[in-house]
Image (cartoon, rainbow, N blue to C red; front, side, top):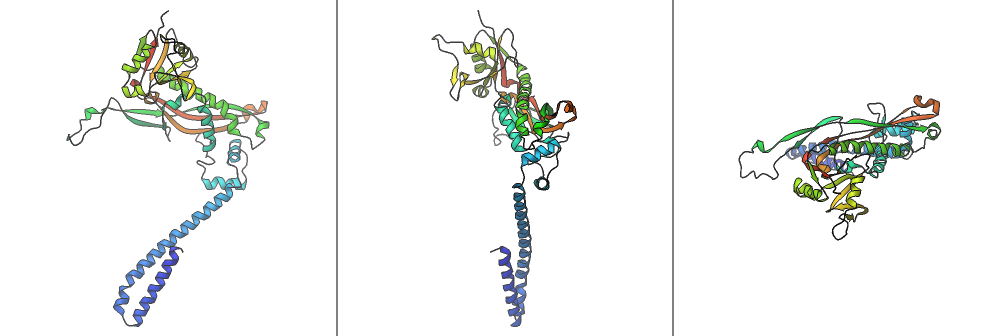
Length: 373
């Protein structure tokens, strides 16, 4: 039974009781019941309003569900990007969901934001390409620019407020990390014949080329910061890495440290053996294709992405503490038919938005090894 029905019955009973008292000339008792009568009236009014809103919401959801069953969000997105007309059912769906998170809205630069599910498809593909972003502190942002306060060289322990009356402000040093999200994109040509099929997996087609270039671009920006760390440890063999882990990093950072190097430096380390002829590197039990040094994961990047010199270079520490990756979490797509009209192709511009910033320079050190002959 709805609450409004029960309240109406209660209201009717009160009215009957008051009328009976009035007929019995019990005016005072009847008057005393007026407050309760008015309170029930107010409660009934509120309850009916809430029930009406609830019914409306249910009807809207049922309508949206019915529309959902008629349309394909991927097809709507394809039509929007390619400038093709939507059906009435597709228009109704787009209007009801309010664009964001479903069939995405027009971006400020004229492209269409890729829907959440399809954007995730691109991200999953990129994760399999050796994204260094996964090792950074990823900060999700919703604006193009902003600042993030960080504590530098701050107190390493909690403060006992019961023992002191005033906090010494000199114990805290704060800085601001400013981000300015940039647009990084690619132009992907697609055959017009392929695009004639509105059911084409547009995102699936562009994700391979865009994903590879996006990963390479992100990694380049991250490596630029890593290569710029201020502390360098030199040595003649792998013991220099041990020294860096033991003495050049905060002990907490050392425990979670990774070792990043290029292919040539990894090959040098991978071929070293101890005095008993055993490799100094251990196999990562979670992935037998990976190696560890003293329990620390080794991350290998291409020589072309991290060029070396006369020394074998290793970057040791926490990338997460060193770098913040500011992720706008937006991928947009737009088309230009005019540019490729002589080749029967349509060019699709795909853009992602991010920024990378150095946060704690002491979180990572460079180890430069000059092997003895």
